[in-house]
Image (cartoon, rainbow, N blue to C red; front, side, top):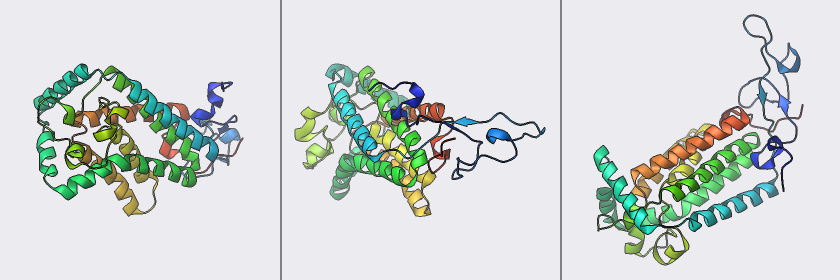
Length: 299
């Protein structure tokens, strides 16, 4: 369905009406204008009314629309990601280039970490399952939590991860990259193959179903940092915020120990996430986490 106007497009989380209100604390009711001047204007230090700050109104999204949107988005993402030409030779050459670059930077320690952790069977098995499952479980869980507890911030925060994932697809196309476990030689161990665990679709019997050369940028890092920042910024209990902050750190350790990514892949994931936050900020006029917690009332 074609949206009549970009500002009214439901995919961007903006309703057909807007409300004008001044800047206020996160959880203040945006439907109540500041007193003293018309239209929610606030006087500056000179006594003259300041220009009203226009923010896109936010509303509680439809659960059915969001469910379908997320399912369709992930389906399209998977199809496009796996349809990108694998370009095996180019991907292996790029992996050699990244490995040389990391040696030049003095951070090429992934192989030593991979071999050391692989010798601890229970630990590497746990990491294999972590890599294969939590990437999806935690991300979906955070989206559901946002929808239920922070409906006013949901659309803007969801836009961040959608934009992050979208720009990552461009990276997969322009820079095919073999993960460390598929590099030439025997520097790295494919821990899923060695331990015969049920794991990533990029290993074992499911390898043919996935583009194995889509390692740059790492969406394990892009999504986990998004989850961690969202939880740390919006959760109430301190212990939950601490767990949120630790989640991307643990994910980084896991992707290196299992030889699924280089350090620089993680940097690429963070850069894509920065693009997502910038797009959301430009669209909503405020950082997603500083939008009102509850839906705005129409003007």
